[in-house]
Amino acid sequence: MADSTGPSMGPTRTRIAAGMTTVFVVLLVSMLALGSVMVLLQLVGVLLLNAALVSSAVTALAPWTFGLAGALGIWTLLLAYAHGWKSNE
Image (cartoon, rainbow, N blue to C red; front, side, top):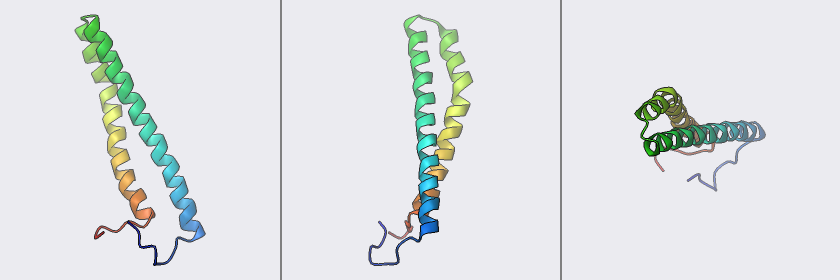
């Protein structure tokens, strides 16, 4: 948690944090959407007893989904620093 008695963020840092928050939301929504599509396609494949659909969904979407998840994790750490988080807190 940021120290409320310390210096506040200036206007430039506030704009940067706001822009980074927008990117965070886009990454989060994209990752969740891809993950949902992947799981729903797998569910349809299981219900239809179509193993090819299940494996094709993973083959096509998993690299993108997990790539976005990795980028989201790194971006979350950067965003925390932009908002004043310190590792000793």
